[in-house]
Structures are given as structure tokens and as C-alpha cells.
Length: 364
Ligand code: SF4
Image (cartoon, rainbow, N blue to C red; front, side):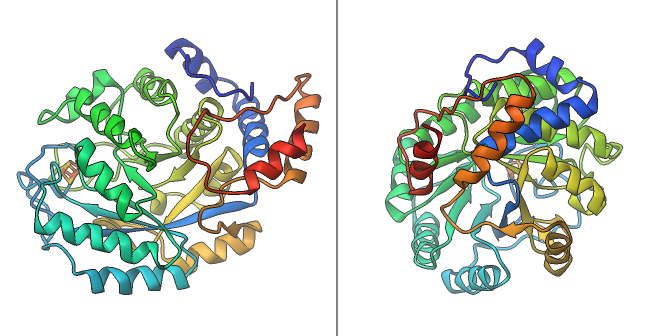
């Protein structure tokens, strides 16, 4: 159960998603403890470094130029502005900064050079730096890697089938190609999706098939709940229930056990109890700051109060792995389940921390 598998089928994932809730939670929490410290949650900050005016037609996105939303467009931020915001994020507990630009794809030139400089600058602050800039070529991925990029985000959004219902200006294959380009470097992959866009549960499972069968699996999987914004084609979608979010988080944790599961858009609609269930089910990252690109997000002080209430600690940068005693705790849970835990790691070429080695040794 704890092995990294790259051959999940849609039927298997649906069976997991539809399990009785208590069983699903127990299994997800057990796997979570085997691979992660359950009391540590990474706080990340998402900065919109270039907002609005995007030529794409993603049906959920208020930044698409063709939709009439209240989003005000902004040119690319300066390196100094980004540095100031990153420092502020760091002082309020963030260990990762994700910079988002509303571009279809990256174009070589002055603006990309400026983004590379932002990456170098944040890197010097000892924070994980991630970018989400649209499609990139292999060469652009290499340049980002050379600048010290830690992660590149490119979401699959939904299943291959449902993707076509939401976006027409580029295909699912294009998305996979960008992920593949990133994989040719030592930059880690962040890729997830959105639930609540009108997709069937089969599509949620389909998206998890696409993500879990990547080899290596993504190091980070954001799970977003749609924030239906007026003026977008998905403006009338009803909010998903917390139970759907909990099931999606738990299923992601089970099929992609090593990844950082990120509770992303839609947190303002979730109670603390709901978020606590998501953390129990294996979510181990939140985005901080009052805005998530352009949509509302809980205030950072409220999040810190929630952390205190739940006894959670913000994760330090570059260390996502668990402590050995957590392995032991997890092993006893597996024994209670009648299963023999077996440690395994993805054959990933990047090993940026020492804690993983301590953990592997402890399990032997
Ligand atoms: S999600 Fe990204 S690519 Fe799609 S419209 Fe919005 S900014 Fe453009």
C-alpha cells in the first residue's frame, strides 16, 4: 500500500475515492504518516507577478482577456517589488514563493530575463522558488534551472476528457509536454487541478491517473476548489462540498504518497474543521496571503491561529520529509491494518535533503 505505483487505473482510484469515509480517512492518514510528518504543513505564497490580459480561454480563469471580469491587468513586477513581497512572506512563515504570470507561454527576451533575475533573488533568501508561467520549452526550463528554480507549476486541471470542456486554446498533450520539458532538468514538478468545474467523479479519478502514472510522480499536487468568478464561463457553478474536497485530498495522498498535497483555491469557503479534516487526510501545504492570484484567500493571521489551534508547524524550506519516529508511528498503524509497511521512494534524481537519508536508515 505504501509503494509508489505508476500503474493506477481509473477503476482502482474510483474505488478508493468512494470508500466509506472513515476507511478512506484512516488509510490516507496512515499513508500520510508513513511519508510525511503529520504535524508539519508548508506555507507557500503565490505572487501574481503579471496579472490579466491572457490570450488563453481557461473557463475558470478571471485573467483571460476575453472574459469580462473585475480583474485589473498589471505589467510584470520589478525584481525589487518581488523581493520585498518575498521577504514579507518569509517573515510570516512562508518557505516557498510561487510566481505566477498570466502568459500562454514564455517568450525569450527581456521579460523572461527579468523573471530569471527574480528566481535568483528569491533563491538567495533561502526560500523554495516556484514559477507558473504557462508553457515552456526545454531550453527555457534549463535556463530556469540554472537560475536556481526549485519547482515549476503546470496544472493538468482535469481529466484529459474533461479538459476539452474547459479549455480550447491548447491541449492536454501540450500540458504534458511542458511537464516533460521540466523533467529534463533538476527542477521539481508541481501539477494538480481543480474540482467543481462540472466534471464527473470519473474525471477527478482520470486526472489522478494522469498525475500518478507520471514517472516520477509530481513532487507537488495542488488541489483547488473552483472559485466561480462572475464573468467567466464557469460563473454559475455551485461550490463543491467539503466532503468532496476531503475525498479528493485523501485519494491523492493514497495514490501519490510522497507528494506535497496543496490545499489551494477555495479555502475561504472551508471551515477550520473542514481544513483540519483535509490535513488529517494528507494535505500538507496551504497558500498564505489574502489573495490567491486574483481570488480571495484567508488572512495569514487567521491561518497562524488555525495552526496554533491544531498544533501544526510551518515547514522549513527544502525539507519535506518525515522524522524517523514518525515512521515508527506509521508502521504500528500499518500493523494494525494487518499490512506490512514497506518503504519506497520514487527513483527521483533530485535529493536535496539529508533527512530522507536518516529516514531510510531508520526503516532498515
Ligand atoms: S489559467 Fe493561466 S493560461 Fe489559463 S487563462 Fe488564466 S492565466 Fe491564462
